[in-house]
Length: 66
Image 1 (cartoon, rainbow, N blue to C red):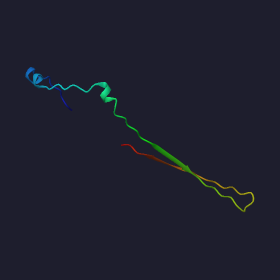
Image 2: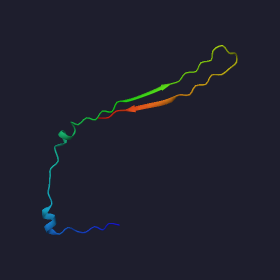
Image 3: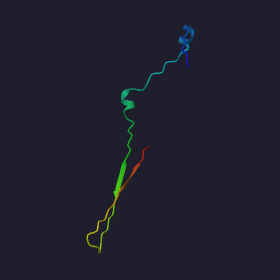
Image 4: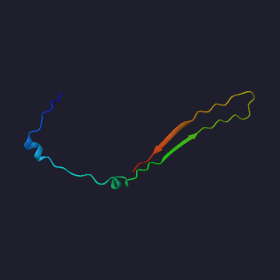
């Protein structure tokens, strides 16, 4: 368990203030993450009578982020 203590006036005066860049500067950073999803499934029912062909697909998902 942590306890908090109040800062003494001398400690508060020693704190450093730094201004953040303007909002316009912060908005220039564009983060693009292209997403590619592919589903493939094949079912072949050839040369048989009254039969059923089933197929199940697994989705692969690729995300690249820089």
